[in-house]
Image (cartoon, rainbow, N blue to C red; front, side, top):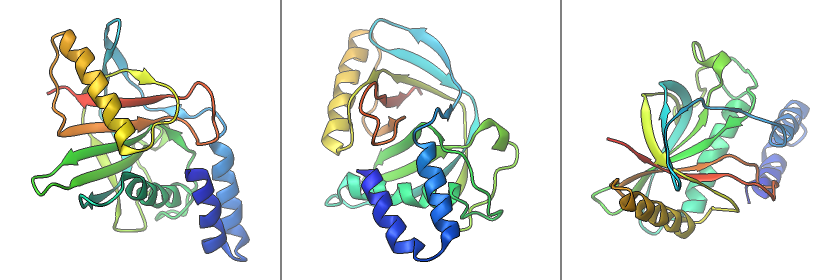
Length: 210
């Protein structure tokens, strides 16, 4: 779980540096508050799914191409902590940034048989015009264009690749019954909640409308 990984991360990198400890504690506390969420409009509200329009927005992202033998949990966790460092103050301005929602993982299947994972945190409204630039080359500001996505919300914990793929297949089947077709080669795996939230969790697979 990411919260346990956070504690290990704290012990490894913090040492006697109280500023890092204070920043870490502040960010963990923010996991348990209400987050600002990326804005969207529901353009189609069907009985089993919805279509949403996300306006152009800025996100902070990092990316990795995984080999077929790599586990999704290892990849997404390593990407998460790079983004967590950015909002914790490891950026060009040394600015701490409030956690937002959702965390999106864009998954693209490659001809090589591997996958490209692009994990992103939404940058809140106040940062859209001039976000702090990343301090590391592996992290970047993404100007995400307008997106129309097909999705539904499911509860519980969805973390392993098999669980995300099960939801993708279920959603695709629903959409097919409604005359909508999607490509499995490009998906978003989307989470809204901290690991220690046990009830009313929100997870989504997004298929992008072309």
